[in-house]
Image 1 (spheres, rainbow, N blue to C red):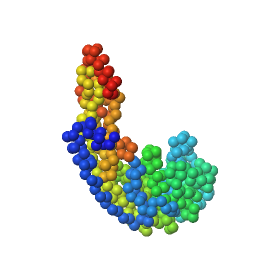
Image 2: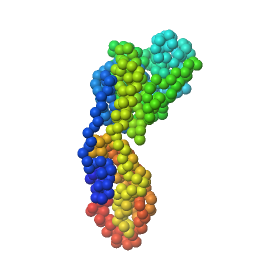
Image 3: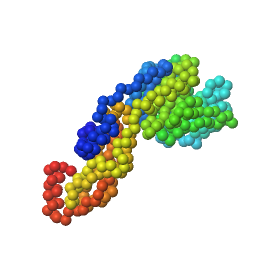
Image 4: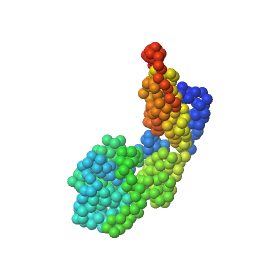
Length: 392
């Protein structure tokens, strides 16, 4: 049932007109503001629904540089969730990890010393905050016995998650002609981390990490001055240019963006902020219900009244695009009929706000007033007949 049909039944014409106007459903959707970017590839998605709000050459497989470390971390987070790894486990820094990913490599590193033993949680922080190649190689060796085998697992799992253009040849994103992903793939992986591992996602908001007495700042430029930003991962190689996977949340709405192929650090920061700014402008916060608003009524069996009004136990406030305003639905669900006597303020169900089949907000509904039991046996019997014929 559409939002207008259901609300017409549960609210009545007067309240319906008011709510429709508030939601903007009575008017044609406003034209969407156009956006352009200097990024060679870009995508912006809504984290809650996965809907693509903007894309530019989003399906082309490109060198992802260190942004591919998102998949390295997914392999770790899934192992932690499965219980095959623990944060306190220690792994030894091999000579290969030290040479190709450590201080002498000249790349991103946490400066782990060769043959040292490092807790997995510290390796995670090194990989996430410092983009440490040595940490990623140590993790690959610990999980799969070597980086090539780990990269094969990464590829298989990424494609299972929907990153269909992803091919990994290492755990770091260091240049390899066959190591490729699209920005759409990266958005899929970012959303998977945010939605499936919220506790581990918190690592991406760490402003700095210190290892071996060396403190390094998080390289994500959004964390410094972009309101609501709390992750995720930068990337750079000469071939790939500057890229960024970023996420921010405002008014309960989270966006995920990926940009790639920028010419400088400053250009990457500016384009990332501009894309997110544009994305958040597409949403309008709407107060669908306030606490105590009447949202419908419930059938009562065996009561002195045949129905009781239902009220929202709390407010519902959602941020919607113009398109979502047109397709949004409200659904009232309760287990009925209610059996008299009915107490006032009793929670009996929920009212849900649904977009594209996904519940984006819900709130319990409570009875507005008490309903006493009908003392007459004949009246209760007649009520049963009505319910059998007409339903609850």
